[in-house]
Amino acid sequence: MGTDLHRMQLPREVVVGNNTLDQISTICKRLGFSKSALIVMGPKTMEIAGRKVMDILTDTGLQVDHLVVTSCNIKDIVFVEDKIAELKPQVVLGIGGGTKIDVAKISASHKETPFISVPTTASHDGIASPLVSLKGLDKPYSLMAQSPMAIVADTNIIINSSYRFTASGCADVISKLTSVRDWKLAHEVKDEYYGEYAANLASMSARLMVKNAGLLKTNIEEGLRVLLEALISCGVAMSIAGSSRPCSGSEHLFGHALDQIVPKPALHGEQCGVGTIMMARLHNINWRQIRDTLKLADAPTTAEQLGIEPDLIIEALLRAAEIRPDRYTILDERALTSDQAKALAKTTGVI
Ligand code: ZN
Image (cartoon, rainbow, N blue to C red; front, side):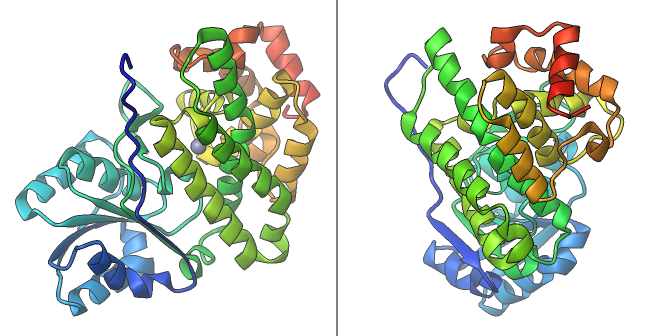
């Protein structure tokens, strides 16, 4: 960085709970958006939540335009950016699981327009982070965009999404148990900037998730609230750190490596969760507890449950460190041979 200046951009409103969508116009008005809004969503999320948001905002007198996107590649982003330039909305709302929020977040950021995140699933921490993951770039990891100005998470809608997304989000939170270790390691070995506050916020979210993972099966409403608060706290941890560092370490590099080599990858959080089991073993922390917590939440803990061939798990372990050479992790420290990678996957029961 070369300077002491450290900019943190944080959400101003976080609203989590039952039927929070009903409050969307109040929230927009409170933030000063009473004239116009552009809604970015997918065809499915339009039915689940988008139409309702459009109606509520239109009824309260806003000029509402909407765009339906299906992916998050450069073409989609340019398409949305052109619309923002043309319509000049006061605010962009991203409604959806992952890609829709990402397209809205990065396009709005490029056009210096505020962005509100309206997640319809709790599948990963991108719902609240300042980062986006783009497909079709040479870099498979995420890029800085902007923090959402508000996050409006309606548990009534999220509770009706496929449980697989929820379990995947839980695994993404648990992955902070190793990403924070990797960050600390990079600080010790490479003198990389380390923010204790951001690190503690991320690891506290993971610990609370470990403690409450059982709720997802016994009391989904309570469990979802814990999960959403954890995901949002992880997003805030990244905003404070100014990078994805607190929330993305070796286990994410493993997940990104799988994305590159597996014909049909599993969900982001699912892959990172399995990575966390193995990276925890490398870090000499309690990998069995991590595995058991994932099991408790019904998240995958094996290659078979991910639907991925054992050989590809080993290949991803070997490739992970190359995904992002600037990000020092336990994988650089250990420099696994192919036999060691295989042994790691076997002892942790992944293959
Ligand atoms: Zn993640």
